[in-house]
Image (cartoon, rainbow, N blue to C red; front, side, top):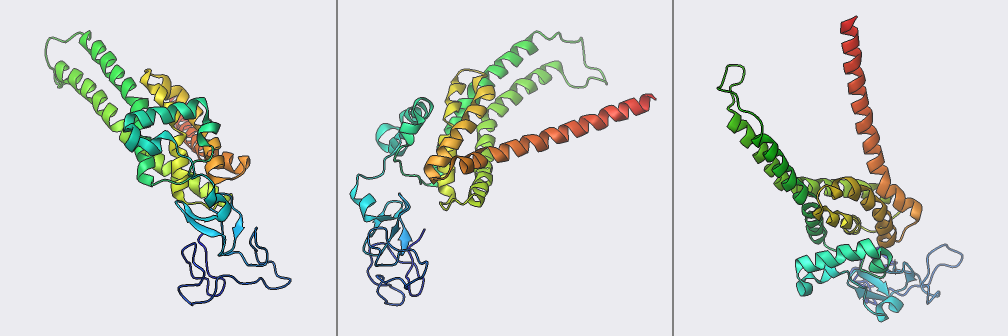
Length: 300
């Protein structure tokens, strides 16, 4: 929440004592008998904002500028907000920071998330997402290409091309293998784009549940929840187990980074995927029902 002047409601930089817009003092006594929020430490002064870390109301004399916005004096004086290894990739190196972050999220997510800065640039989160997608799909895609290439090698070749089969067998085999390789390259990019969209839908649900932090927090939480895709280095494992593991972990990351309830976090993490499955599954069932009905009708 951006701190605002009690007199003119203009935003100001935490730490200021007077409003830069109207010049009024920011320390203002609350109106007797009103429900105006007051400072948690100095109840004789009206609150001008809430702490980005603990959520406490703070007056102008208590509010400080932190890396994540306005924070109360108590939070500001404590140790800086923690980081995950991914935030220190300039020191550790990108791949090492990625591996350590994934390992921490898999083995001890509560400890890893404890006290970390909930916010991060969207670009940083999307880079993490892209790496999880590469780890999750590339090994499996390459193995599929090898398998299909091996199968194509044993497909018997006809004596020659016919009007009914104008494509040369060798061209068809090459097309299958190249298609699998192209899928291997494009799938991480497509997956990263879909993740961005899914995080946007989750954020709308979280906002409906009352969370106030921005989309960048949701994107960071969503990105960290994808750590289970690191198991994709083992072929086929990530495709079938990681999505469910990640959804469960997402409930934890949304609750921790947004400081919300378990119910709101679960709704934000699970409602969109469940609805998507129901819609897609229902559409597929409707199409199959129509097809079978048409076949049975034509048979009569």
